[in-house]
Image (cartoon, rainbow over all chains, first blue to last red; front, side, top):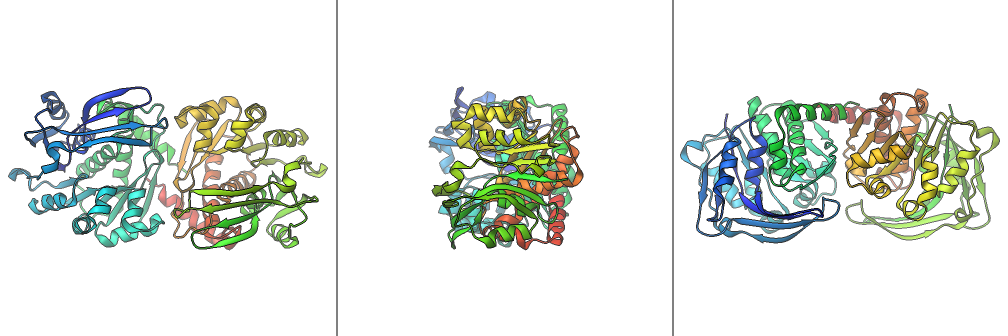
Length: 302
Length: 302
């Protein structure tokens, strides 16, 4: 079973109260691929600029990402710059330089069009739709989006939402997308737009799955130290999709496998904030993963 | 087994985007007592002013509160006024008129000094200590506090914290009290101050129990409609303490009974925002409680 991700490969300049890192590896596709690493190889489609370091592509390759779908264009790579507040949750975006990402037209390599699992990371909904049109029929399609597209391109977003199985958003985005204050109402509205299942990511407050016929609330693991939370949401998606791919899940399945995938996403995402860039994810071996899975399950026993 | 609560009996003027209610029954002791109602009678110690309606005291009595420890003084009752934002979470305090509450000196009736369970609701820590000194030795003492006391009377707060078993606070208060960003660190610091167990209340994001040797994460129930969230935290405490009293729990017990009490607190608190004042709590019968408990447990199954 193959997982395909279409998203950004970027450089992030991140300032925290303790440290500043310049142009470290970031981007939704990078976090997603490294998060799924070892458990399931991931096919990456994206674009990088002339400045993108060969060692960063090599690092992704080394950790289970197939980057042969990443094209290099003339110009600078996507660059995001942000500063975290003392709480390590709130952040200010200082700069968003799209670079070569501005003209990104994702083309799926012919050999990858039959990938069984597709994750449409947060990019323009028209591009997400363009990707979908190239695929021969994935078993399962998940999509992430953000307030920018909800506000600016609502019709495009509706068109692509009609074709996906799982929407992953945060609670604010779910409310904005539907105009509903209650997440119960919001989840029902979203299901009516297309996605049969909705995952609400709430960072340190955990995550909710509104499944086909059940609801799951997963607490976040309690971390001793948060170094850099950038990418935790895409890491969640990586762990979530890897579990579904491992299980051979498809959209018609019951909620049980999706509930397990929520735990996998939660455990995977918990490693991300423990280091800058993908360092926290890379530091976690399968033993650390199993230990944390046991801790999460223990946190959920009534 | 008797539960004693010392806290406020107040009038709240609450504005929501849909409705405004003037001088409705509120206060920590009121919500706590009604939340525990039917499951366990609650002895209330507090003060009200000349304006406090006899029917409000009668209502509390009718629902399992013994208000013979509530004294009436010359002057107005404690009055809080606030306005909820569109999200029904954020709120602005418009007025806090302490009235007779300003000179409140809680005296515990002689016959109540051997109460087994004591909840010190959010009042000045010196008063909480004064209550403790009158007791003959409760099996279990729980305490709530707020940012005001953490900032203004830190030494008094430390003195009373050294003598209690369970602290119930929200996540911001836990961080402020300890200066720790990580809740894991904050919980350890608080345990070192005295309370062996710490409950972190997070409203719509659920609650965490840092137990003697385990951690529990409980999601909040997903509500269709939020009418007025005022008092949900004290309702949580009421459901939590009622379960502990029912079980005859004491401070030396293992975490299991405290974990069950977290579920009782969560289910009980979920009814509070569904109506103004204590109306949501009153509308919930034991059948509704059991139905919601089943829904909560289902939300927690991995």
